[in-house]
Length: 100
Image (cartoon, rainbow, N blue to C red; front, side, top):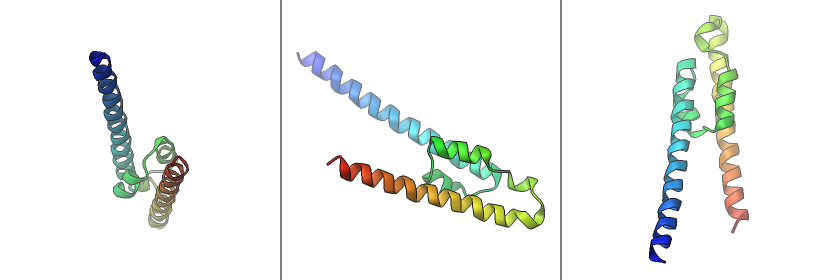
């Protein structure tokens, strides 16, 4: 019936919106946490995933390090974020391409 079709479409739309809200929340969380620890918020915003949250949790806070190690650790942390960003984009394009 028309009502069943409408409810099915509405349910699919709500699930799509919910998935985008969850992804945005994860991205904002990664960005915020990376910024607090002293890393680039934008790199980690775009590299965000559940794995990125775990990686950020394992990385040290820049302010707690010796002065001589701060810049090196910041660079290493941001490079890890860039690698995760490139890997996730590559994975996303590969999955999209293979599902055609």
